[in-house]
Image 1: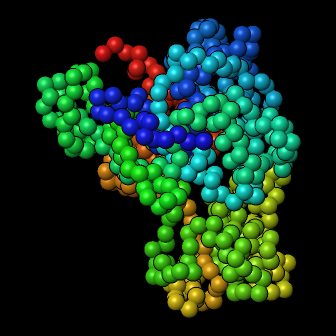
Image 2: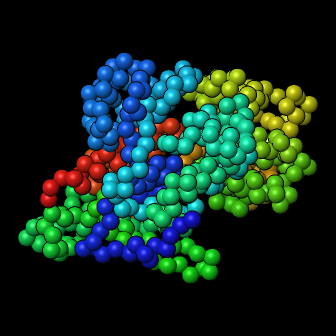
Length: 490
C-alpha cells in the first residue's frame, strides 16, 4: 500500500508543498482534500440551518475550500469548540446530533489540476492509532460518525455485509474501512508506512542570503536561487523494515502538518517500581498475556489503574476471560467529571456495566461481580519486585495487594520529540508540556496554522479535536489555507 520514500527524496531547491506527519483519520482526510477531490454544494440541496443556507447560496459553484471559512461558520453551535470542525461536520452530516438523516449538502468532484503534491508519513500502515487497538473493541462514537468524506461508513459496512452494534462498530472494522478508503480513493501513492520522523528543522534565509534566526529555533541558512522561498522545513527520519536495517530519509517541504495524535507517550504515575517487568502502560500487554496464558482465571488478580474508557476496556477484556481484577482509581465513583457519568446508558451498556462494578466496592469473592474489586479514591504508592502494590486510601491508610500484572491506563500525551523542546513553544501555555486536553498547540481556528510558526500546522488531538467527525474540519482548514497560499503571487 505504501510507496518507496526514495521516490520522493527532495532537495532544498525543490521542496514538496506539504508533508503530513501521521496517517490516522486526520492525515487520510487531508490527503483526500489535497489530492484534487473538491467539495461543492450540490445543486438543489437545502441545508436545514437557514442562516448557513443563505451564505452557501451567495457563492454558487465556488468550492468550499476557496470560500471564507470564518464567515461560513459564524453562528454555528455543536459539540466541538472548533468553528471549522462544526462547519465541515454540519455540511457532511446535517442534523446528525438530533439523529436526523438529512443528506450531505456536499458533492465531490475529482479535479486533478487542483491536486497538491504531498506525502503522508506514518509509523505503521494507514489508520494511525487504530492499528494498535484490539480489533474486537467497540468504538465510543457512533459508527456513522467514524466515516470520511464521500464514502460513508454505513455504506462500507453494507458492502462488507457487516452490522453495527447498537449503532457502534468494532475497532477492527474501523481500521479496515480506513485502509480501504486509502485504496478506494487512490491515495496510496502519497503514503509511506514504517516512517519514523526524528527531526523537523526550519531552514530560514533572507533575500540577501544572510543568516536569520527563526522565532522558535535557530537553524543554519540555506541559499536559494528563488527569493520567494523564504523558509522551508527539513523532515528527517528513518524507514523501519523487516530486515532490521533502517533506511534514513530526508525530505524538504514548504508546509508541514502535525497529525500524530496523542497515543505515543502513555502517562506515568512517577512512583517507585513503575518500570518493573510486570508493570505496563498499554492495554496490548493484557491482550498478549491472555493469549500466552500468562494470566488466567486462577492467577493473582490483574491490577488496572485508571478511570477512563481504556481502563474500562481492559476490565471488560479481563472479565470476558474470567481473569480476576483489582481496579484502582483516584476519583470518587459519583464524580461528575468521570466519563461514565456522562455516557447515556442505552447507547453504552458495557461501560455502564463497568460503572456499576466500580460502584459495588464489595469483597473480592461472593459479590454480584465476583472476581472484581473496586478501589475508588486510592493512590498507588509503590510497586515491589515480588509483584506487590502498595496503595494509600483517602484516609491515609496503606494497603498491599499481590498481583499477576499491572496496567497503568491513565491517559497519554503526544510524542513531539522531533520538535525543539518537544513542541512546548507551540502550546497555549509555553511553560507546560503539550497535552491534547489541557495544553494543545495554539493554532489559528480557521487555518490550523500554528500561531508561533508559519507553515507548520496541527490537526486532530494536537489541536484539541478528539472525535473523528470533528478532526475532519481541521483537515478542511489546512487544505483551504495551503491551496490559497500556493495561489498567491511570489
